[in-house]
Image 1: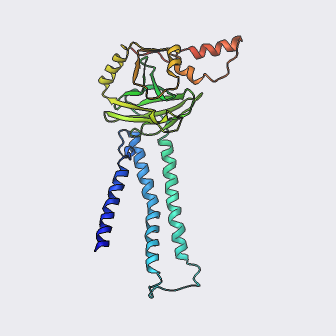
Image 2: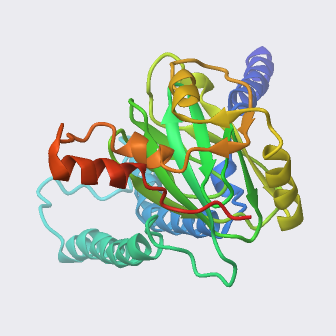
Image 3: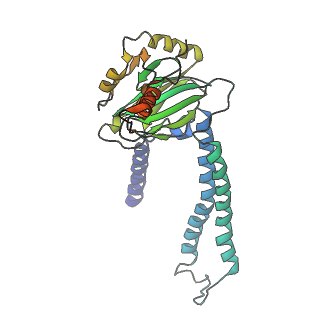
Length: 305
């Protein structure tokens, strides 16, 4: 009886410990708030289900065989010279081959349909956001509106968001789990990502690639609101006393962590392109050098009124 009560008590303690350990786990990937996130959730569940078609029977048969052919079971067939079974060979090879073939087709299709560079189909014009991964904070530039923010990403719901990403120095990975795909931001390069939020809310974003001592605090909030609320934020941001030019950017890009949210009322039009091309070799003089410098300084988009 004492052993029974001890085992029962130990079981309860073990269950509580497991629940407490899982308390810090996030299920954001299984609570998507955007079309891309929903498709990726379906892909994860389908792939998991297909793999469990092999894993669960193998585990079950392993336990069954251990019980069935135990030394004390005199009814089990003892066949020390058994070497081959065509039926077993067919089952062992055919089922995994079918699953691998199905997964190959599934991954081929979703690789193209969920390509982060592929624009989303929508009747609503996308909002373009230029993202710069700094050490250790995020800079978001809205070229169509001429404003910028640090560590906060306001977006309108049901509107495709067209991201262009780069990094000032260390490589980072831009990731909003509830909205979908992550993509890397690398110095001297430009990557792209297209996402959409279908429900208003605040969705945590992060860097999912280790980039130094401030990595653990490199978070931001994605604030998805209605279009009128987003437009109102744009108007409020334009009233900020801060401006983002080359001088203020040089101060901002200095390594720091736990930076407060900040908004900039105006942004130099060629700032993002300048960050991307800062490591490119430019001729010191001559017509080619002048042409390249003029191209780098030329704004790519005019701020929308």
